[in-house]
Length: 465
Image (cartoon, rainbow, N blue to C red; front, side, top):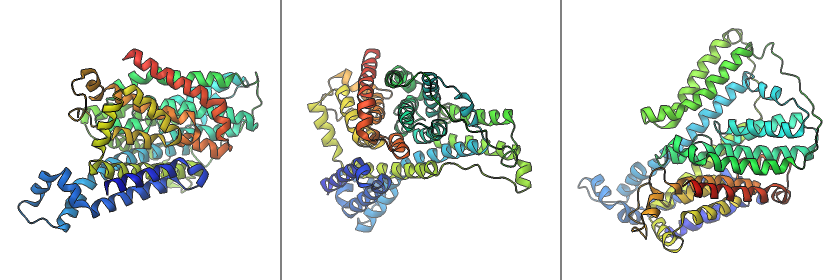
């Protein structure tokens, strides 16, 4: 049954990787394999529990006679809920950050971005878009940032060919910016939430590699742009009955929202509570500020919600379901105990974290970056070096402790794999759907250079380590 579960996971991964061809939603696939995995697991629960949790199960029985019902109750209460909780922490964090974005957007707090981008110098516009995307993506999730910036870009640029170039730069900046912090990408969030890395150490280690992976391909893209471009400026939204916030009030709300997200790592370090609680705290404060500033409109029943792009709302919901599905599926595989055999095989035949990083990057080109990262890091537990084949190698063992280089390599490589092919990241898929970009064109114009930049970033990490 363990091999059946692995086969289901691999088939699901193949369907996720080929979703752009089959048009089958990856979130639906992830939820299906996650659900099916646990149904099959609990059907053969006695074998798995006795091999992996024998003593804990006997303690759960408390001297009572073992039965099929008792096994199922133990799995449901002591094994399954653990993975539901881990997945829920990530989903709630994404939900909170998305709600923060919606409040800020409804009050016109992102209108300043359109004002900043008023230049006909193509290279200046390219770098301004990239820097803004990079900074915002480091604080919000990749999909939210990418979609928001693509909507702005689409309104500014009438030329589709130019939109393809600028859109590619936005995807590159979003993936690199998201990989820089623990709250900018689900991969880093998983590592931080489980205590595998700390926020400051993670960002400090990935700063130069992420910048290299971002700057080089964007500079290359800029070479294909003309000196000047034509823009179509959109008038600022009407400020009569949709919001009564003036410029300084909108700036204050932006500071509360984004500044609050910056405070989440400090909140986690002080309280040791899950980061999603900090995100919910920021959301509640921003919500209160929103109601104070807009109390006149609310009392008069005149509050009109500024529309959030449907692709943003629908896309983030898909991302939440996808994350939950993958975490449940990987959790079911881990509880079978078969991952220890794979770990031993890797340690015996590869025994090199840098090679593992290259393999991770290649896989994430085709498979989703989050699914790739979760599959690799689930093979190891932080500080759990007893099962390593070469436990006498201190340098190798040190890669798997808290803030070890292994976790950063996997997080970085999985994120950068999404820059090589659009199908590897949710940001790339958003660009494909919005601008109808062909995979071959992207790989030829952007992917090859992005691959070289990713490897350069790995080399920088190796030098600094």
